[in-house]
Image (cartoon, rainbow, N blue to C red; front, side, top):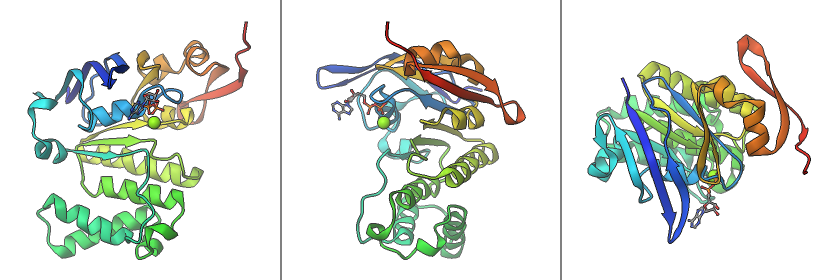
Length: 260
Ligand SMILES: Nc1ncnc2c1ncn2[C@@H]1O[C@H](COP(=O)(O)OP(=O)(O)O)[C@@H](O)[C@H]1O
Ligand SMILES: [Mg+2]
């Protein structure tokens, strides 16, 4: 059953249009949609729109209800958004942030259960030893992981992740995407993630869209979207798509497309 249908989105900043008739594949429980495209394609604008932070034309229908008919509270009870920018450097502690995020949600959990949930998340994300370290003392990668923990603690049905792994090394990129995949599969939720790494997108996403200059260039299954022709058109690289581990597509970039 379709849980999220996004159709004909048009988004402006002032008078300048940045998204043009963007229609996404419909999403069901268990789907991870990857949003690909070069810088300034409009990925963050789309994520912000889905997060409820941007006016839009068109429709976002979530579980049968148009998003703009839902209150802020109704939307945020089901949706968590991790922005592209990690939590700012400050003297706040990760564990404090997680407690206040969880408390704000009014989860029907006893302190002991909440504490176990927070400990588990810190452990899974390798943040245990940093739980009491002020954010200003953490690397960008660790702060990005704190940002992810803040989204996951909400246990959302729809998880919106804007470049969740951009500051992470390979090990933590896989840990994060494994965790997202596990959440979505176990809780029957959905995730939409803007990603730069095409191979990680091919491995973890059930569906992909390729965005360029605010327009959808390709949408559908991984093999429909990750084609040499699409990569040449959008990223201006000559590439071949080969079959890798467990049949996952792997993109081998051969070089930039030459002008002329
Ligand atoms: N707050 C804003 N005000 C005006 N223009 C913006 C704003 N945010 C982004 N843009 C512009 O919108 C376009 C899409 O940006 P963005 O959604 O951040 O792309 P991406 O995430 O794919 O790099 C870019 O041209 C960017 O300069
Ligand atoms: Mg962005």
